[in-house]
Amino acid sequence: MSVGVGLTSEQTFLKVYTAYTTSSLQITAPPSSQLNFTTITFDIPTMAETVMPIIIVAALIIAVAAFLVERRVTRSTRQAKGRKR
Image 1 (tube, rainbow, N blue to C red):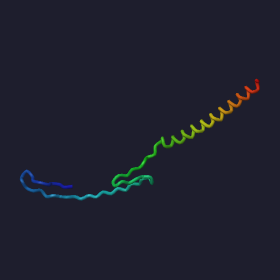
Image 2 (cartoon, rainbow, N blue to C red; image 1 turned 30 degrees about the horizontal axis):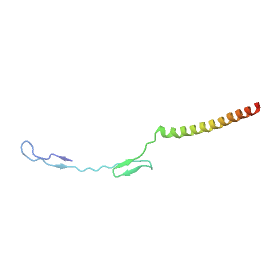
Image 3 (cartoon, one colour; image 1 turned 90 degrees about the horizontal axis):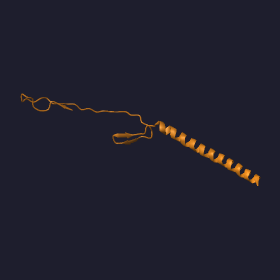
Image 4 (tube, rainbow, N blue to C red; image 1 turned 135 degrees about the horizontal axis):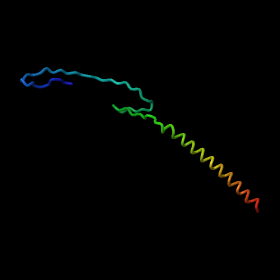
């Protein structure tokens, strides 16, 4: 950062003041974060990441239950047809 470089309107030089700054930053990031020179990349968990496995498990339970119910219904229908003959 430089202040007062050049000539004034009276054609006199100004004193030049130079300031040097260094910045530091401490960040706490998750273990899965990645560092690339000056960029830190990490994923922030969302509600969808929690709900999605629950939806998948519920769909599997429904599929298995529907399969078992369908087998029972078709088995009883087959037995009923066999008795009528």
